[in-house]
Image 1 (cartoon, rainbow, N blue to C red):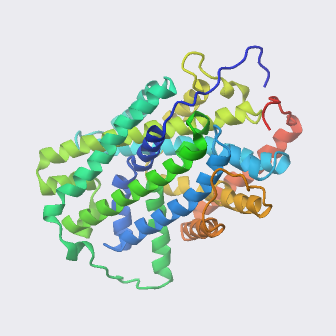
Image 2: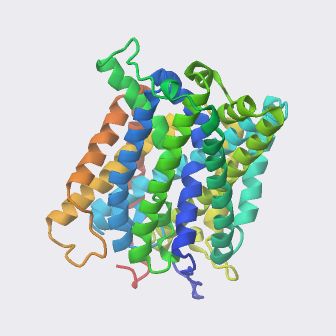
Image 3: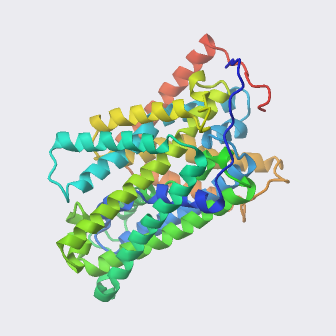
Length: 452
Protein backbone atom coordinates (compact mmCIF):
# COMPACT_ATOMS: atom_id res chain seq x y z
CA UNK A 1 0.00 0.00 0.00
CA UNK A 2 1.48 3.36 -1.06
CA UNK A 3 0.11 6.64 0.22
CA UNK A 4 1.46 10.13 -0.22
CA UNK A 5 -0.29 11.58 2.82
CA UNK A 6 0.12 10.11 6.30
CA UNK A 7 -3.00 8.35 7.47
CA UNK A 8 -4.57 9.31 10.80
CA UNK A 9 -4.18 6.65 13.47
CA UNK A 10 -6.80 4.86 15.52
CA UNK A 11 -7.32 6.43 18.94
CA UNK A 12 -6.97 4.60 22.27
CA UNK A 13 -10.22 6.01 23.62
CA UNK A 14 -11.98 3.01 25.21
CA UNK A 15 -11.83 2.56 28.99
CA UNK A 16 -12.21 -0.77 30.81
CA UNK A 17 -15.89 -0.02 31.51
CA UNK A 18 -16.55 0.81 27.86
CA UNK A 19 -14.60 -2.18 26.54
CA UNK A 20 -16.48 -4.54 28.86
CA UNK A 21 -19.79 -2.96 27.83
CA UNK A 22 -18.96 -3.52 24.14
CA UNK A 23 -18.13 -7.16 24.86
CA UNK A 24 -21.31 -7.77 26.85
CA UNK A 25 -23.73 -6.24 24.37
CA UNK A 26 -22.00 -8.22 21.61
CA UNK A 27 -22.44 -11.45 23.59
CA UNK A 28 -26.14 -11.05 24.36
CA UNK A 29 -27.89 -9.63 21.32
CA UNK A 30 -30.78 -11.60 19.91
CA UNK A 31 -28.86 -14.86 20.45
CA UNK A 32 -30.26 -16.28 23.71
CA UNK A 33 -33.82 -15.18 22.94
CA UNK A 34 -33.70 -17.09 19.66
CA UNK A 35 -31.67 -20.12 20.80
CA UNK A 36 -33.36 -20.93 24.15
CA UNK A 37 -36.29 -22.75 22.45
CA UNK A 38 -33.87 -24.73 20.24
CA UNK A 39 -31.72 -25.78 23.19
CA UNK A 40 -34.65 -26.68 25.44
CA UNK A 41 -36.26 -28.69 22.64
CA UNK A 42 -33.09 -30.62 21.87
CA UNK A 43 -32.29 -31.37 25.53
CA UNK A 44 -35.96 -31.99 26.42
CA UNK A 45 -36.18 -29.67 29.40
CA UNK A 46 -33.94 -28.70 32.33
CA UNK A 47 -30.96 -30.66 30.96
CA UNK A 48 -30.60 -27.65 28.66
CA UNK A 49 -28.65 -26.09 31.54
CA UNK A 50 -25.81 -28.48 30.66
CA UNK A 51 -25.46 -26.81 27.27
CA UNK A 52 -25.23 -23.37 28.90
CA UNK A 53 -22.67 -24.65 31.42
CA UNK A 54 -20.57 -26.22 28.66
CA UNK A 55 -20.77 -22.97 26.71
CA UNK A 56 -19.60 -21.01 29.76
CA UNK A 57 -16.70 -23.44 30.33
CA UNK A 58 -15.63 -23.07 26.70
CA UNK A 59 -15.88 -19.28 26.90
CA UNK A 60 -13.59 -19.21 29.96
CA UNK A 61 -11.05 -21.66 28.51
CA UNK A 62 -10.96 -20.02 25.09
CA UNK A 63 -11.14 -16.60 26.75
CA UNK A 64 -7.79 -17.31 28.38
CA UNK A 65 -6.30 -17.87 24.93
CA UNK A 66 -7.73 -14.59 23.67
CA UNK A 67 -6.67 -12.73 26.82
CA UNK A 68 -3.04 -13.81 26.49
CA UNK A 69 -2.90 -13.04 22.76
CA UNK A 70 -4.82 -9.76 23.08
CA UNK A 71 -2.59 -8.48 25.88
CA UNK A 72 0.54 -9.50 23.98
CA UNK A 73 -0.53 -7.95 20.65
CA UNK A 74 -3.09 -5.17 21.34
CA UNK A 75 -3.63 -4.18 17.73
CA UNK A 76 -6.63 -3.75 15.45
CA UNK A 77 -7.72 -6.98 13.77
CA UNK A 78 -7.77 -9.62 16.52
CA UNK A 79 -7.34 -13.07 14.99
CA UNK A 80 -5.78 -11.67 11.82
CA UNK A 81 -2.86 -10.32 13.87
CA UNK A 82 -2.67 -13.35 16.17
CA UNK A 83 -2.55 -15.99 13.44
CA UNK A 84 0.05 -14.08 11.45
CA UNK A 85 2.34 -13.69 14.44
CA UNK A 86 1.76 -17.16 15.91
CA UNK A 87 2.58 -19.00 12.69
CA UNK A 88 5.33 -16.69 11.48
CA UNK A 89 5.47 -13.55 9.38
CA UNK A 90 6.56 -15.54 6.36
CA UNK A 91 4.39 -17.78 4.19
CA UNK A 92 2.74 -19.98 6.85
CA UNK A 93 1.60 -17.05 8.99
CA UNK A 94 0.37 -15.14 5.96
CA UNK A 95 -1.50 -18.24 4.78
CA UNK A 96 -3.31 -18.64 8.11
CA UNK A 97 -4.17 -14.95 8.33
CA UNK A 98 -5.37 -14.95 4.69
CA UNK A 99 -7.64 -17.93 5.38
CA UNK A 100 -9.07 -16.05 8.34
CA UNK A 101 -9.71 -12.91 6.28
CA UNK A 102 -11.30 -15.01 3.51
CA UNK A 103 -13.53 -16.73 6.06
CA UNK A 104 -14.37 -13.41 7.72
CA UNK A 105 -15.57 -11.85 4.46
CA UNK A 106 -18.23 -14.58 4.41
CA UNK A 107 -19.10 -15.20 8.04
CA UNK A 108 -18.93 -11.65 9.43
CA UNK A 109 -21.72 -10.36 7.16
CA UNK A 110 -23.62 -13.57 7.95
CA UNK A 111 -23.33 -12.86 11.69
CA UNK A 112 -24.60 -9.33 11.18
CA UNK A 113 -27.38 -10.53 8.87
CA UNK A 114 -28.45 -13.24 11.33
CA UNK A 115 -28.91 -10.66 14.08
CA UNK A 116 -30.89 -8.40 11.77
CA UNK A 117 -33.08 -11.32 10.65
CA UNK A 118 -33.67 -12.28 14.30
CA UNK A 119 -34.64 -8.68 15.03
CA UNK A 120 -37.24 -8.75 12.25
CA UNK A 121 -38.53 -12.12 13.50
CA UNK A 122 -39.09 -10.82 17.05
CA UNK A 123 -40.74 -7.68 15.70
CA UNK A 124 -43.57 -9.84 14.35
CA UNK A 125 -44.78 -10.24 17.95
CA UNK A 126 -45.67 -6.55 17.79
CA UNK A 127 -46.50 -6.10 14.12
CA UNK A 128 -47.84 -8.61 11.59
CA UNK A 129 -45.15 -8.49 8.91
CA UNK A 130 -45.06 -10.22 5.54
CA UNK A 131 -41.83 -11.90 4.40
CA UNK A 132 -41.00 -8.91 2.21
CA UNK A 133 -41.61 -6.51 5.09
CA UNK A 134 -39.31 -8.58 7.32
CA UNK A 135 -36.55 -8.21 4.72
CA UNK A 136 -37.14 -4.47 4.60
CA UNK A 137 -36.84 -4.28 8.38
CA UNK A 138 -33.62 -6.34 8.57
CA UNK A 139 -31.98 -4.38 5.74
CA UNK A 140 -33.09 -1.03 7.15
CA UNK A 141 -31.71 -1.96 10.57
CA UNK A 142 -28.25 -2.54 9.11
CA UNK A 143 -28.34 0.85 7.38
CA UNK A 144 -29.33 2.50 10.68
CA UNK A 145 -26.46 0.81 12.54
CA UNK A 146 -23.88 1.90 9.98
CA UNK A 147 -25.12 5.47 10.44
CA UNK A 148 -24.82 5.15 14.24
CA UNK A 149 -21.25 3.83 13.93
CA UNK A 150 -20.14 6.65 11.63
CA UNK A 151 -18.55 8.59 14.49
CA UNK A 152 -15.43 8.63 16.70
CA UNK A 153 -14.58 5.82 19.13
CA UNK A 154 -15.10 7.91 22.31
CA UNK A 155 -18.70 8.63 21.35
CA UNK A 156 -19.20 4.96 20.55
CA UNK A 157 -17.78 3.97 23.94
CA UNK A 158 -20.25 6.22 25.79
CA UNK A 159 -23.18 4.93 23.70
CA UNK A 160 -22.08 1.33 24.39
CA UNK A 161 -22.34 1.86 28.15
CA UNK A 162 -25.94 3.09 27.76
CA UNK A 163 -26.82 0.11 25.55
CA UNK A 164 -25.20 -2.32 28.02
CA UNK A 165 -27.35 -0.91 30.86
CA UNK A 166 -30.48 -1.60 28.79
CA UNK A 167 -29.21 -5.10 27.99
CA UNK A 168 -28.32 -6.08 31.55
CA UNK A 169 -31.38 -4.37 33.01
CA UNK A 170 -33.75 -6.29 30.76
CA UNK A 171 -32.29 -9.67 31.71
CA UNK A 172 -32.28 -8.77 35.42
CA UNK A 173 -35.93 -7.70 35.14
CA UNK A 174 -36.68 -11.04 33.49
CA UNK A 175 -34.99 -12.94 36.33
CA UNK A 176 -36.57 -10.93 39.15
CA UNK A 177 -40.04 -11.12 37.59
CA UNK A 178 -40.01 -14.89 37.74
CA UNK A 179 -39.02 -15.28 41.40
CA UNK A 180 -42.60 -15.13 42.71
CA UNK A 181 -43.77 -17.67 40.11
CA UNK A 182 -40.70 -19.92 40.24
CA UNK A 183 -41.20 -23.68 40.59
CA UNK A 184 -37.85 -25.22 41.52
CA UNK A 185 -39.08 -28.79 41.06
CA UNK A 186 -40.11 -27.95 37.50
CA UNK A 187 -36.93 -25.97 36.68
CA UNK A 188 -34.53 -28.67 37.92
CA UNK A 189 -36.47 -31.81 37.01
CA UNK A 190 -33.45 -33.48 35.43
CA UNK A 191 -34.50 -36.48 33.37
CA UNK A 192 -32.38 -38.12 30.72
CA UNK A 193 -35.36 -38.66 28.46
CA UNK A 194 -35.45 -41.32 25.80
CA UNK A 195 -31.78 -41.01 24.79
CA UNK A 196 -30.32 -41.65 28.26
CA UNK A 197 -26.52 -41.53 28.64
CA UNK A 198 -25.67 -42.74 25.18
CA UNK A 199 -23.88 -41.71 22.03
CA UNK A 200 -27.06 -40.00 20.90
CA UNK A 201 -27.14 -37.94 24.11
CA UNK A 202 -23.65 -36.55 23.41
CA UNK A 203 -24.61 -35.75 19.84
CA UNK A 204 -27.63 -33.82 21.12
CA UNK A 205 -25.46 -32.11 23.75
CA UNK A 206 -22.98 -31.05 21.07
CA UNK A 207 -25.72 -29.61 18.87
CA UNK A 208 -27.30 -27.81 21.84
CA UNK A 209 -23.94 -26.48 23.00
CA UNK A 210 -23.32 -24.99 19.56
CA UNK A 211 -26.49 -22.92 19.97
CA UNK A 212 -25.39 -21.88 23.47
CA UNK A 213 -21.91 -20.97 22.24
CA UNK A 214 -23.49 -18.74 19.59
CA UNK A 215 -25.01 -16.77 22.46
CA UNK A 216 -21.67 -16.52 24.29
CA UNK A 217 -19.62 -15.41 21.28
CA UNK A 218 -18.36 -11.86 21.57
CA UNK A 219 -16.15 -12.18 24.66
CA UNK A 220 -13.18 -11.58 22.32
CA UNK A 221 -14.57 -8.49 20.55
CA UNK A 222 -12.27 -6.27 22.59
CA UNK A 223 -9.29 -7.96 20.83
CA UNK A 224 -10.54 -6.73 17.45
CA UNK A 225 -10.43 -3.22 18.94
CA UNK A 226 -6.99 -3.71 20.53
CA UNK A 227 -5.56 -0.51 19.02
CA UNK A 228 -8.37 1.54 20.61
CA UNK A 229 -8.22 0.23 24.20
CA UNK A 230 -6.55 2.23 26.94
CA UNK A 231 -3.88 0.33 28.92
CA UNK A 232 -4.61 -2.76 26.79
CA UNK A 233 -2.21 -5.15 28.54
CA UNK A 234 -4.40 -4.96 31.65
CA UNK A 235 -7.79 -4.00 30.30
CA UNK A 236 -8.13 -6.57 27.51
CA UNK A 237 -7.88 -9.63 29.83
CA UNK A 238 -10.02 -7.90 32.49
CA UNK A 239 -12.78 -7.02 30.06
CA UNK A 240 -12.84 -10.57 28.64
CA UNK A 241 -13.28 -12.25 32.04
CA UNK A 242 -15.64 -9.64 33.43
CA UNK A 243 -17.93 -9.98 30.43
CA UNK A 244 -17.87 -13.80 30.45
CA UNK A 245 -18.62 -13.95 34.18
CA UNK A 246 -21.45 -11.45 34.02
CA UNK A 247 -23.11 -12.99 30.98
CA UNK A 248 -22.71 -16.59 32.19
CA UNK A 249 -24.48 -15.75 35.48
CA UNK A 250 -27.27 -13.93 33.62
CA UNK A 251 -27.75 -16.76 31.10
CA UNK A 252 -27.88 -19.53 33.70
CA UNK A 253 -30.31 -17.57 35.87
CA UNK A 254 -32.44 -16.63 32.87
CA UNK A 255 -32.66 -20.19 31.58
CA UNK A 256 -33.46 -21.52 35.06
CA UNK A 257 -36.20 -19.00 35.81
CA UNK A 258 -37.87 -19.46 32.42
CA UNK A 259 -37.98 -23.23 32.98
CA UNK A 260 -39.31 -22.64 36.48
CA UNK A 261 -42.19 -20.50 35.19
CA UNK A 262 -43.11 -22.11 31.86
CA UNK A 263 -43.34 -25.85 31.04
CA UNK A 264 -40.36 -26.79 28.90
CA UNK A 265 -42.66 -28.00 26.12
CA UNK A 266 -44.12 -24.49 25.86
CA UNK A 267 -40.66 -22.95 25.87
CA UNK A 268 -39.49 -25.27 23.08
CA UNK A 269 -42.54 -24.44 20.95
CA UNK A 270 -42.35 -20.64 21.35
CA UNK A 271 -40.98 -18.33 18.66
CA UNK A 272 -40.97 -15.44 21.16
CA UNK A 273 -40.00 -17.08 24.43
CA UNK A 274 -39.28 -13.83 26.32
CA UNK A 275 -42.52 -12.24 25.13
CA UNK A 276 -44.45 -15.39 26.08
CA UNK A 277 -42.75 -15.45 29.48
CA UNK A 278 -43.69 -11.86 30.39
CA UNK A 279 -47.18 -12.29 28.97
CA UNK A 280 -47.63 -15.34 31.22
CA UNK A 281 -46.48 -13.48 34.35
CA UNK A 282 -48.14 -10.12 33.68
CA UNK A 283 -50.23 -9.44 30.59
CA UNK A 284 -50.01 -8.89 26.84
CA UNK A 285 -49.01 -5.23 27.22
CA UNK A 286 -46.01 -6.09 29.40
CA UNK A 287 -45.12 -8.80 26.89
CA UNK A 288 -45.02 -6.12 24.22
CA UNK A 289 -42.83 -3.87 26.37
CA UNK A 290 -40.42 -6.76 26.96
CA UNK A 291 -40.34 -7.41 23.22
CA UNK A 292 -39.36 -3.78 22.60
CA UNK A 293 -36.48 -4.19 25.06
CA UNK A 294 -35.35 -7.40 23.32
CA UNK A 295 -35.29 -5.45 20.07
CA UNK A 296 -33.15 -2.77 21.75
CA UNK A 297 -30.75 -5.49 22.92
CA UNK A 298 -30.56 -6.94 19.40
CA UNK A 299 -29.77 -3.49 18.02
CA UNK A 300 -27.09 -2.95 20.69
CA UNK A 301 -25.43 -6.28 19.92
CA UNK A 302 -25.30 -5.66 16.19
CA UNK A 303 -23.83 -2.23 16.96
CA UNK A 304 -20.96 -3.92 18.80
CA UNK A 305 -20.52 -6.76 16.27
CA UNK A 306 -20.18 -4.44 13.27
CA UNK A 307 -17.80 -2.22 15.23
CA UNK A 308 -15.42 -5.11 15.97
CA UNK A 309 -15.52 -6.80 12.58
CA UNK A 310 -14.87 -3.55 10.70
CA UNK A 311 -11.36 -3.46 12.21
CA UNK A 312 -10.30 -6.82 10.70
CA UNK A 313 -10.11 -5.95 6.97
CA UNK A 314 -8.59 -2.61 8.04
CA UNK A 315 -5.73 -4.37 9.85
CA UNK A 316 -5.08 -6.71 6.91
CA UNK A 317 -5.06 -3.84 4.42
CA UNK A 318 -2.64 -1.90 6.62
CA UNK A 319 -0.19 -4.76 6.35
CA UNK A 320 -0.60 -5.21 2.59
CA UNK A 321 -2.69 -8.39 2.84
CA UNK A 322 -5.98 -6.91 1.65
CA UNK A 323 -7.25 -4.21 -0.68
CA UNK A 324 -5.51 -0.88 0.15
CA UNK A 325 -8.77 1.08 0.30
CA UNK A 326 -9.73 -0.80 3.47
CA UNK A 327 -6.81 0.81 5.32
CA UNK A 328 -8.30 4.28 5.00
CA UNK A 329 -9.18 6.02 8.26
CA UNK A 330 -11.76 8.79 8.45
CA UNK A 331 -9.79 12.03 8.80
CA UNK A 332 -12.15 13.65 11.29
CA UNK A 333 -13.54 10.76 13.35
CA UNK A 334 -10.54 8.40 13.04
CA UNK A 335 -12.23 5.08 12.27
CA UNK A 336 -11.84 2.69 9.26
CA UNK A 337 -14.83 3.95 7.32
CA UNK A 338 -14.25 2.01 4.06
CA UNK A 339 -14.11 -1.30 5.94
CA UNK A 340 -17.25 -0.38 7.90
CA UNK A 341 -19.21 0.51 4.76
CA UNK A 342 -18.08 -2.59 2.84
CA UNK A 343 -19.04 -5.06 5.56
CA UNK A 344 -22.31 -3.23 6.09
CA UNK A 345 -23.13 -3.47 2.37
CA UNK A 346 -22.49 -7.24 2.30
CA UNK A 347 -24.53 -7.75 5.48
CA UNK A 348 -27.37 -5.78 3.93
CA UNK A 349 -27.36 -8.09 0.88
CA UNK A 350 -27.17 -11.25 3.03
CA UNK A 351 -30.06 -10.04 5.19
CA UNK A 352 -32.22 -9.98 2.06
CA UNK A 353 -31.05 -13.38 0.77
CA UNK A 354 -30.97 -15.72 3.78
CA UNK A 355 -33.26 -17.05 6.50
CA UNK A 356 -32.41 -17.74 10.15
CA UNK A 357 -32.59 -21.51 9.68
CA UNK A 358 -29.14 -23.12 9.72
CA UNK A 359 -27.33 -19.75 9.71
CA UNK A 360 -26.25 -20.12 13.36
CA UNK A 361 -24.69 -23.54 12.77
CA UNK A 362 -22.93 -22.42 9.61
CA UNK A 363 -21.48 -19.35 11.34
CA UNK A 364 -19.85 -21.32 14.15
CA UNK A 365 -18.72 -24.44 12.28
CA UNK A 366 -16.84 -22.45 9.64
CA UNK A 367 -14.88 -20.61 12.36
CA UNK A 368 -13.82 -23.51 14.57
CA UNK A 369 -10.76 -24.83 12.72
CA UNK A 370 -9.16 -21.69 11.28
CA UNK A 371 -9.88 -19.29 14.11
CA UNK A 372 -10.48 -20.90 17.50
CA UNK A 373 -8.55 -24.17 17.30
CA UNK A 374 -5.66 -22.67 15.32
CA UNK A 375 -5.18 -19.87 17.85
CA UNK A 376 -5.06 -22.30 20.77
CA UNK A 377 -2.62 -24.59 18.94
CA UNK A 378 -0.49 -21.61 17.92
CA UNK A 379 -0.31 -20.32 21.49
CA UNK A 380 0.78 -23.74 22.77
CA UNK A 381 3.51 -23.79 20.10
CA UNK A 382 4.61 -20.27 21.03
CA UNK A 383 4.77 -20.99 24.74
CA UNK A 384 6.70 -24.22 24.12
CA UNK A 385 9.48 -22.05 22.64
CA UNK A 386 9.70 -20.16 25.95
CA UNK A 387 9.29 -16.84 24.16
CA UNK A 388 6.64 -15.42 26.50
CA UNK A 389 8.62 -14.79 29.66
CA UNK A 390 7.73 -11.07 29.55
CA UNK A 391 4.13 -11.55 28.35
CA UNK A 392 1.80 -9.06 30.14
CA UNK A 393 -0.75 -11.82 30.80
CA UNK A 394 -0.23 -15.59 30.88
CA UNK A 395 -3.04 -18.08 31.38
CA UNK A 396 -2.92 -20.04 34.64
CA UNK A 397 -2.33 -23.81 34.53
CA UNK A 398 -0.97 -23.61 30.98
CA UNK A 399 -1.58 -25.50 28.67
CA UNK A 400 -4.67 -27.09 30.29
CA UNK A 401 -7.18 -24.30 29.41
CA UNK A 402 -6.01 -24.22 25.79
CA UNK A 403 -6.26 -28.01 25.48
CA UNK A 404 -9.74 -28.03 27.05
CA UNK A 405 -10.90 -25.37 24.60
CA UNK A 406 -9.56 -27.39 21.65
CA UNK A 407 -11.34 -30.53 22.87
CA UNK A 408 -14.68 -28.75 23.35
CA UNK A 409 -14.46 -26.97 19.98
CA UNK A 410 -13.76 -30.26 18.20
CA UNK A 411 -16.56 -31.97 20.16
CA UNK A 412 -19.02 -29.32 18.97
CA UNK A 413 -17.69 -29.55 15.41
CA UNK A 414 -17.95 -33.32 15.02
CA UNK A 415 -21.33 -33.73 16.73
CA UNK A 416 -23.06 -31.48 14.19
CA UNK A 417 -24.41 -32.07 10.71
CA UNK A 418 -21.65 -33.15 8.35
CA UNK A 419 -22.93 -30.87 5.60
CA UNK A 420 -21.75 -27.88 7.64
CA UNK A 421 -18.35 -29.50 8.17
CA UNK A 422 -18.07 -29.91 4.39
CA UNK A 423 -19.05 -26.24 3.97
CA UNK A 424 -16.25 -25.27 6.36
CA UNK A 425 -13.74 -27.48 4.55
CA UNK A 426 -14.90 -26.00 1.25
CA UNK A 427 -14.16 -22.48 2.51
CA UNK A 428 -10.70 -23.59 3.66
CA UNK A 429 -9.91 -25.31 0.33
CA UNK A 430 -11.15 -22.37 -1.73
CA UNK A 431 -9.10 -20.05 0.50
CA UNK A 432 -5.98 -22.14 -0.09
CA UNK A 433 -6.49 -21.94 -3.84
CA UNK A 434 -7.05 -18.18 -3.73
CA UNK A 435 -3.98 -17.68 -1.55
CA UNK A 436 -1.63 -19.45 -3.94
CA UNK A 437 -3.15 -17.62 -6.91
CA UNK A 438 -2.64 -14.34 -5.07
CA UNK A 439 0.94 -15.25 -4.20
CA UNK A 440 1.75 -15.98 -7.83
CA UNK A 441 0.04 -12.93 -9.30
CA UNK A 442 0.74 -10.45 -6.49
CA UNK A 443 3.83 -11.49 -4.48
CA UNK A 444 3.74 -10.14 -0.94
CA UNK A 445 5.69 -6.96 -0.31
CA UNK A 446 5.72 -5.42 3.14
CA UNK A 447 4.56 -1.88 2.61
CA UNK A 448 4.78 -0.47 6.10
CA UNK A 449 8.35 -0.86 7.45
CA UNK A 450 7.21 0.20 10.90
CA UNK A 451 5.20 -3.01 11.26
CA UNK A 452 7.03 -6.16 12.35
